[in-house]
Length: 305
Image (cartoon, rainbow, N blue to C red; front, side, top):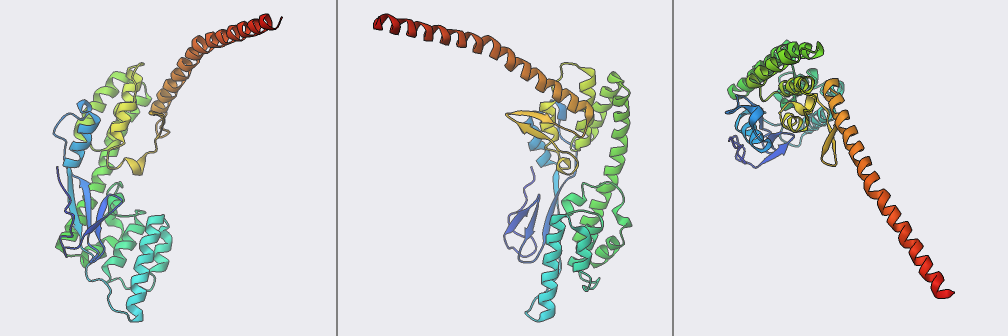
């Protein structure tokens, strides 16, 4: 398992966790953790705990060195610091267009500003979310400028993220073919293809969605909850899917109608079971209560008269 150092490799200051990455508040260095390898075992056969453990072991850490930070108390340095700070807040809030307004007067040769513009252009809060995207991020005019301003390590990080984004697009296209088989009701073919995809891409939530949907149409008694919990541990799950759980049961996964239908069936079955239990337990309990009350009233009447 890979461990992220607790001190900045650049300046030695303590690191602070921020949404899956680690940042140094002294020099601005960011360590981005990206799943970058296959799992050591068949993901479908792993327990939830073992799956999480292997996911962590598959991660690699990539540094982003922010370069020299604006220092001093002159008005230009203060303005630059405040603009960069505000740009970070806007990225976190998802107000990407406003980032450009805040950085309007910041030169293009400031790495931190150009990085913020790249993230805003790609509609990503940070590099973790950037690495979850699909497509060619190098098309952004800010990508080339970020690489030109970056040091060697940071340049390699963004090149790796760009490669991951292209891989994401290719993987999504492959998995999409399996989803077509699911939609056509080709249960056996869909499940065979889904298992191939999961073996190739066990850290991608889309591969889990495919095999869960395939199992739903292949096996009328299959419960998807355990596999959905595995799926929820994948690094890109929070950026692509929404799932709701209550009282220990997953009851909402609206990203896929086949999976959602199976969850609704399970919820209805639980409701019927509770209703039957209520019928066989509550009814007799009420009857016993009524008899006890009648007996008590009879005894009271006997004592009085």
